[in-house]
Length: 270
Length: 124
Image 1: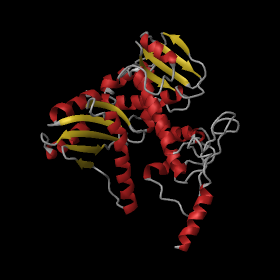
Image 2: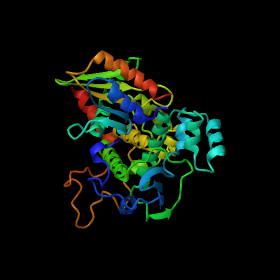
Image 3: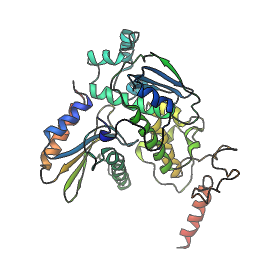
Image 4: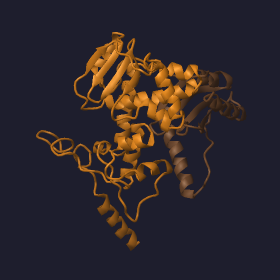
């Protein structure tokens, strides 16, 4: 039902995984495996996704308060071996179909974002592999690719420093910072200079992409440090490339501290 | 038992003047389900854009020090109503229902009432 006129086909931004599109066209069933995780297909549609970077459906359901951990464990024991955990939860009325679908879609798109991310390495396909959770609401490959593109664009629009997504989050403490929005406070409290955004998400039981969005917003507002991009790749001007300022991209993260001191000085003169 | 599709179908058929309805995650801006809309009204675009509306209002309330929660947000256009209902309850915070209505055919009071009922249907 999602997408309406747009369902199916490759998204405008180009295919993230040509192999995935071919498998969808062939109506394949099995698991697409990359270094960044796995996408499970059934008759060419995505029925599940998992990634080490994203909390699993079990964590989202139990940490989010929808299911007690012992109820989840009971479902795993009773139906895990038959790959019918979703069916078991619904048949025993542990959760409403709508709530289970919502959590499942959150987990699916969350993991898919990382599986289809850059640096996922080569793809392999294991024909016939089935995920233990069981199919719930299949999603067309075109929709998964489109949403993944949209999410990349959203992060870029918020604060275009992708190194924030994988680096330990370091909190900035300064006198003049805007108040922290309520939903981002929990993220900031876990910013201990060790945890990365996916680790913070796992601790809170939230989708990892939510943490990426929150940390980009917090960094843009000056609450977190924006680490320098990794040396040797990324925004540095290589041979034959346009300089960053010519492309309209700021050359690395601005020195927020200096900007704030300038602002303070200007305001003091008013 | 209601799944998201039957809940959205219920909204389409039981509320007068509905143009489209979407269930939206407002941190990511993703529509978890949409129904209605069409070529001239892309509900996925509406879903992503309206997360900024919700965030701006929540932020303003925090700056004002209002210790209250948003129940719904109404935007009145010349020819349409857009209604945003923030969901509450276990695990559903962070979602909203978005409803676009044809102003000439809609009964606003009734639509708000129905939206509240539909929110409850997501839980049973």
